[in-house]
Image 1 (cartoon, one colour):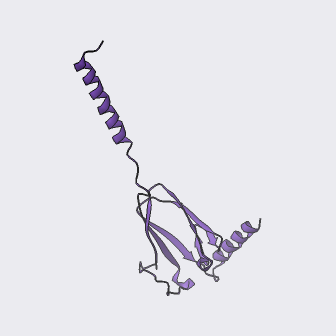
Image 2 (spheres, rainbow, N blue to C red):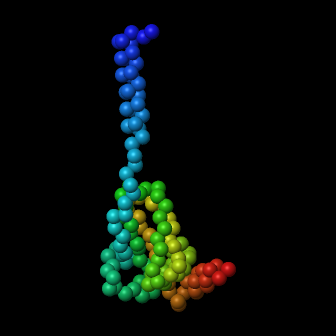
Image 3 (spheres, helix red, strand yellow):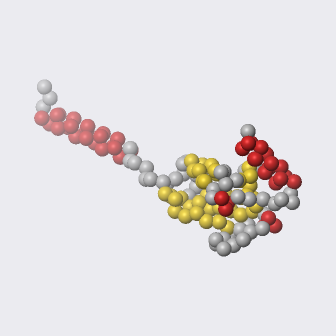
Length: 133
């Protein structure tokens, strides 16, 4: 039979162990999307009233997040968001941009489709061929 002092010491040590284990299992805060915006190739923010042409070359989409590093993200495009190429895929109204959050500030390059470039036309044709299969 344990003495009261030994029993109290055993309980104290057990409580410290439980508290330490719980401190190690702290919950990760929920990931948050803080802001999303577009810039031109010179890093000037684009408003909704800005019209781009294929001569601009590309734009960047920025996603500002908090506690989201390592999360997988899917961005659904609106009908108005066509005319871009992302990772050698022409983006249609049904396209989804999928990527993994690597930083709190994520920069995604979207190439503006240029119908005068054969490479862009091949990419677009390949995208539509895949979607019809």
